[in-house]
Figure (tube, helix red, strand yellow):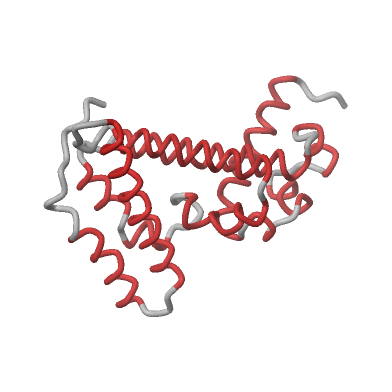
Length: 191
């Protein structure tokens, strides 16, 4: 039975949505094509019809999709403090499948490389641009450096907090970054 273009697009969307969530939960190598295809009701053949480049194509597109949703959330922040406080929450700490791809996928992407790393790099650059719209600075370079510092701090704190088996220490890592920003320069976003 031939699949319509609309159904093929819906199938691809379903696979990307599932991969975006499952890769953050289980890692890029933590779920196989068969399991992923079955999770959305497709066969191996159906998967390769959507992703002729195989798992690398899927992983790079899923990583891009994951960043897109985070960028939309970040663009809605009115200030750096709001963004940081919204990022460094218990809900984000507990929700790997919906959270930021940096702490969830960074190590996997470093091992995978190729197109997946390119998609991750583009996502990071897009997040930096989003941050630059919120930070104060006299020059582009000042805003860029501040954005790198913020991104490194919040993603690093989340990564460490998730790795710990001490809820108290996890919370201390998150709070150490939150408490470090009230004095940081910020401006209202026009977004």
